[in-house]
Amino acid sequence: MSMAVVTLKKGEGRLLKSGGMWVFDNEIATIMGSFLNGDIVLVHDFDGYPLGRGFINTNSKITVRLLTRDENQKIDEVFLEKRVRDAWEYRKKVTDTSSCRLIFGEADFLPGLTVDKFEDVLVVQSLALGIDRWKETIIELLKRVLAEDGIHIRGVFERSDAKVRKQEGMELYKGFIGPEFSTLVEITENGVKYQVDVKDGQKTGFFLDQKYNRLAIQKLCKGARVLDCFTHTGSFALNAGFAGAREVLGVDASELAVHQAEANAKLNGLDGTVKFLCENVFELLPELEEREEKFDVVILDPPAFTKSRSSVKNAVKGYREINLRGLKLVKDGGFLATCSCSHFMDYELFTKTIGQAARSAHKRLRQVEYRTQAPDHPILWSSDESYYLKFYIFQVVDEK
Image (cartoon, rainbow, N blue to C red):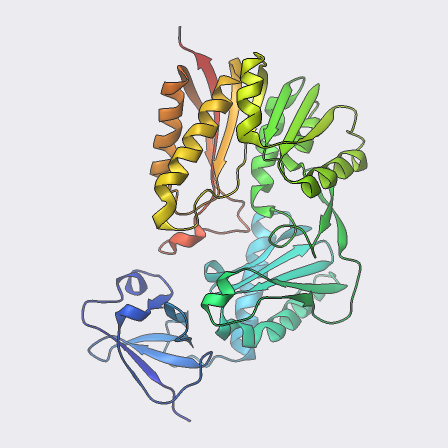
């Protein structure tokens, strides 16, 4: 059976031609041939030049997600096994694989699919109709490839409960793939132990992308008084405690997250020095400033203040406010670790916003380092969405 052919308008497909993997609905001139949403189609330029193969979904603004630039490449189990093997071989070279992201969507050339490994459990998130059809095949391939290295997966849980699925015309789904198992998984990262709730935790249960950023703050925290804002389940706070901080306060507005953080502190024998508070960070920081509290290290790891271009302006205000407040609490010569996890808040804008906050707080910043996400979340050039985490460490000096 011949495949449907998607032909681009003249002058369109700039993202695709520069290395991207998406074709948007407004770039398409014609779709010739019959297809069902989720099927593999051929993509041609306006003049018939072949651009590759991908899966189609006319319910989505991203109408085609490219799988290969070779128009003759068959999309089958052999093809998918090569993708899976490449992803695993890459992780073995660049990261600690005990718990890591195994598949990172477009950056691993499997668009719409995320797979995280927490010790012997896999958590899957499928956000595109075409890849959803292949999901269970890819999971079986992953299990087989991991087993070759002596890693036996005891369970798989699906967290396809992100609202973005509705834009693909798909229902939200959360549940086991295969036999049920205990969804509370203990992992160790940078020497710190955590209980990860893969069923009810945020996203896939734990934010693996900050792994080496958490490690980077350890050296600053020995003997320090540390404030960790938006602590979630306590990961930065616990790294500070593990490194020998004399006193750590982690703050989060979620009662559930704070309870999990306290349990994690106890698990590591750090509940004597690492304490948690269930408070709104935006309300707490001015109170701490009023009480003239000072910290050796302040960590700001807020949720994404923007998930669309239209809300970037408001997000800038949020980031400026939180950095201004955080800077005022750092003692002279202390350190600020600050980050943004939204790709819409790009490097230039985030950097500019921190600079504005520093001027308003009358503080001088000495950059210690700039970091991004851990390498198991690779940044694919020409796929802007894969570059989302910006992380700075500064020494904060009073104006003198």
